[in-house]
Image 1 (tube, one colour):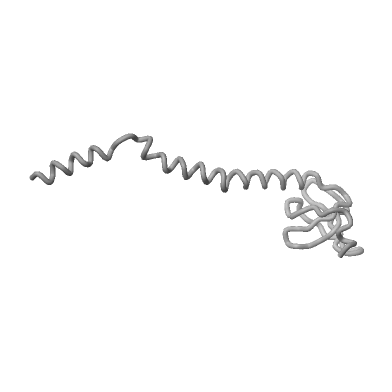
Image 2 (cartoon, rainbow, N blue to C red; image 1 turned 30 degrees about the vertical axis):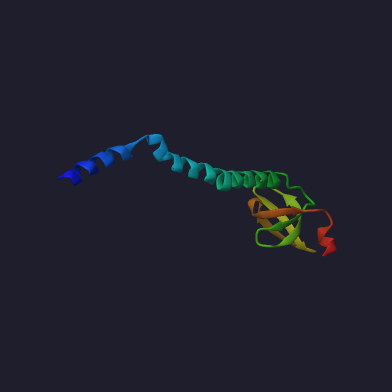
Length: 107
């Protein structure tokens, strides 16, 4: 009988402060925010600004790895000249990065 009474007292003592039981969960959320969520939103914002700033004559690399020069900019699409006389339409959000001027000639 004495075993049951001591177990009951131990269970009451473990209840404790609810803040200390949620503290590890709060710390994990803060770590995830600073290591995953915040950098991802920052990168998405930078990409959006880059895509909005596209202009005729920019040299770009697409997400698929194509290198070319922008010949026409529309609301949702850009015309990309891959080679002399070879122009393709590309969705704006598929632009991976904008390269410095003269990069294509250097290749």
